[in-house]
Length: 271
Ligand SMILES: NC(=O)c1ccc[n+]([C@@H]2O[C@H](COP(=O)([O-])OP(=O)(O)OC[C@H]3O[C@@H](n4cnc5c(N)ncnc54)[C@H](OP(=O)(O)O)[C@@H]3O)[C@@H](O)[C@H]2O)c1
Image (cartoon, rainbow, N blue to C red; front, top):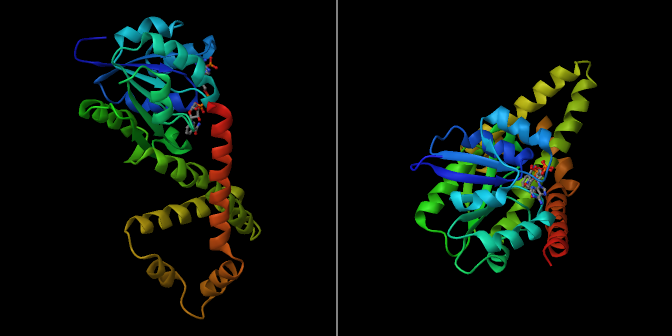
């Protein structure tokens, strides 16, 4: 660790930590040290795979780092925060855990501690996450920039409020499962025509990828639909079935169910 580097301690070395580490490694300003709960094989893998420092005693590293990333399950935060409370002195504390908001972190850490909440999705491992982040009250501009540089490597991101993360995680974090569900049905239908599973996957994945690119043009939804669905044509017949089957309302209900469940889980985990 040199004077010019920003030293980052990861507590947690699992899937999401590794996605972040892989991204951060592209940025030479960061020097990483990684700890976990005790899975030695995993820690050794992370050390070799990403060329980072590791430690069995994260507590000893705290005074040497600028940023601490909590990359562990929500229910394991309390024990770590209780220890951190005794050790932090000016470090930025970032969690990536569902439900562990800046308000909660501030309530558990010494007054004035800079905290942030980063919420990636599973596409982070391909560098394609859309990550939401929110800041506590004491994050300065330099630390805000550090956070953006930390998450740049896992995809795109948006700075929102803590309340918005609670509400938007259903869309950025959960809704990919809705897309996969839709894709699985379309893939099965494609296979029924006699093409291979591999061909069906390619076809459906590229159809979604192409649609994604069209969405990114910001063209109006109705124009996009109209472009495909000529009135009285075959696509319009399919769209009509979806509308009559309350497809938009069903999506609303699915998002509401995710939000409701997340709230229930948060109240179990943090109180
Ligand atoms: N996976 C996702 O797509 C995703 C998306 C958004 C947010 N997140 C959030 O990211 C966090 C991590 O998820 P994950 O999928 O990476 O989990 P994971 O693969 O299960 O890894 C969890 C890591 O936390 C470590 N850990 C647990 N308790 C600990 C403790 N007391 N002290 C130190 N380390 C501890 C584990 O240590 P060992 O290695 O010793 O087992 C492991 O390295 C969760 O809060 C999750 O909500 C995940």
